[in-house]
Length: 126
Image (cartoon, rainbow, N blue to C red; front, top):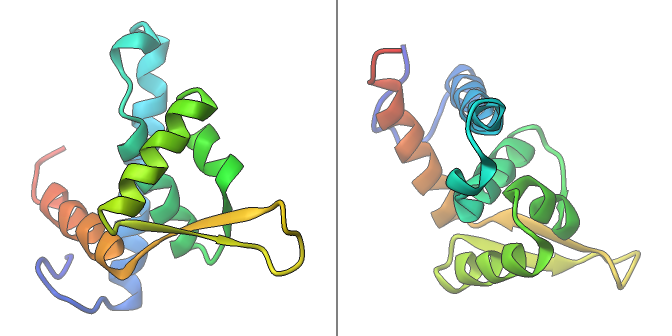
């Protein structure tokens, strides 16, 4: 059982939340098998899920990966990324090895917000 409302998560809870985020993201992508994609866009949310999943796996998410995960054209995805940064949910940093490569990650505020929603979502029956 997930520890709903806990600030720090046990490793098993982290895995459960990441699995729920992965299922949410996969389900959102699969909807386009039945409905036109133009009705399904939420680039900011899809990007946040990507950052949460990648961070939970210990992976670095590039800005290009964020844009692709958002499901939106790059200029739109970058506007969403700027909005997420302005709201303190995500941050972008340059690679120390490649000045053209930028990585994106959730801030602590962003991570806690996603985990809060995932805990809430876990209370719904499937």
